[in-house]
Structures are given as structure tokens and as C-alpha cells.
Length: 157
Length: 194
Image 1 (cartoon, each protein chain N blue to C red):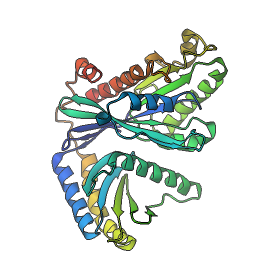
Image 2 (image 1 turned 135 degrees about the vertical axis):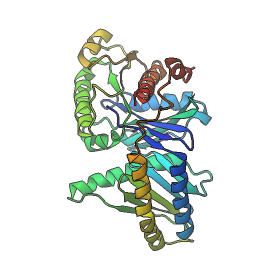
Image 3 (image 1 turned 120 degrees about the horizontal axis):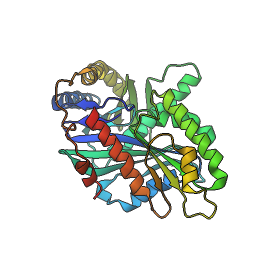
């Protein structure tokens, strides 16, 4: 059986975006992402330009999954942060429960600053996502309850 | 795990192509990539060895269209088929919404199909899923080769439930979209239930 879907409401989405905007400004980052551990992009803030954010989200999740697997092999629960430093651009990833906070930055910032600011917002993001995953929408009628076979077939015409 | 974003009006689902080494999982994705309009899909990312064998996964996002005002985006993944990459296969199954098992129809690959299907069932269990309950399609690939096992025999050996069985030649694209459609339909039908 597949897991229950995650439903992200507009208000929650904008709250998350606001936290990411704050983080981006305070860490002088280029782009800040919030992604879930399965590689689904939740929100992005910053100069995305031509950046392929979907692929980056998926690869970051693969990266964290692979290093998490290595951590287990050596008796660690996980590696809570990962950093990749390039010549001009760098990436810092923090694991926050089932979320990945990804910060892309250049030489206008520094790894120390990005780590510090990421840590400062981690509780806030974690609380917001708890609200998302624990929300009870059982009393609401899902817009998908009415999906017909014709709706689905129309996607493949 | 299906992710529904009400702000961007998007549904995101994850589909994994599973199967033994060299059965044509990557070829399925390559065909979808080549046959889809650029605006409907993202890049095809392949984490492959120098000899073009899948090392970790292939990934491609695909937008199928709008249903009930929501854009449907499918994230297509393949696993590495070679037996010794089992740790990677387990990781890729996390959060899966639907699975395609790509079987190699050639007689000499039957044991590899059976072993890979057993491995799929075990790895799904490890991640808390049950093959009997998850959206699932069996694709019988390489039907153009001379030494293939008859469809009825393959199905008898590899079918696990009432899953759709699709004959395919992924290298030419035959059956590739039928397979995708069959699994996507089941994933969206699950949404109706939840």
C-alpha cells in the first residue's frame, strides 16, 4: 500500500517560503530549497534562473540516502549535514527529520555562516512540516475523490 | 509518497522501474524522454558507470497534464539491476507510489527475472510496502528477440496478482507508453481512495 499523500496547503506553503526567504537573506545564499527525503521539492527561494531544481532535489535526496546507508554501515544513525565545496558554487545539505534543507551559495557567503543559519531555522521548518503531516483532513472531501476514469484517460491522449 | 501542493496546484508521484540487469529499464526511460515534448519533461539524469550500466539510478520528471485543476507530475526512477547493488535498490524504493517490473523475455534470463522479482518483494517489505497492494505493472520486454519465452509461460511464472501485463520492445518504444499509462492510472486511482 502506498503511503498517505502529503497535502501542503497554501498557508503552510507561504509560511515555509517565508522561512526560506529569511534563511537565504541571512546566509547570503543564492538558492535555498526544502525537499523531502524521497526527492520531492517542497519549496524553493532564490535565484533559480536556469537551475534544474527538480533534478537537484532528486539528486540531493539520492546523495543523502547513499551517505545515510554508509552511516549505518559504520554504526552511525545518519550524517546530519553534507557539504560539497566547488570552485565557485557550493552546496550545504542539512537533514531535518524527513526533510532536507539545501543551501546553494557562492563566495559572497561561507560554509560556517550557512551552517549556523541553517541550524537556526531547522526547528521552525520541522514544526511547520509536523503541522503539514499531522493535519487531519478526514472531514474534508478530497478534490481527487471525484476523479473519473475519463479524467485519467484524458492525460494520455 | 504522493505529494500534493495546493499552492502550486501540483500532484507529484514516484514510479520505479525494477528488474534484472540489462532488462531495459533505462531504455524505457530513454524512449519516454525522446518521445515526449521538452516542455512536458525535465532532464534525464543517469548515474551510470563508464560502461553505461546504471550505478545508482536514472531519473526523469514527466508532466502528463492536468486533472481536476492539478498538474500531474510523475518522477520516474530506475534501479540498478545488477545483483550486488541491492543497497541502492532499497533506497530508491523509499516513498514509491507505483512499480513497473521489466522482465527480460529471453529464455536464458528467466532465472534472473525470478530472482529480481523476489528481490523486489523483499525490498518492498523492508520499506513497509506490500507488492500485492501497491500499483504495479508487469512489462514483458524484448519481445522482438528470437529466443523469447511465450507470453503465457512468462505470465504464469511472473504474475503475482491481477496486474496489467504489457508486451514491449523498449528499444523501439513498443509498449513503453502503455506500461507507463497502466501504472499511472493505478497511482491516480489510489488518490481517489485516499
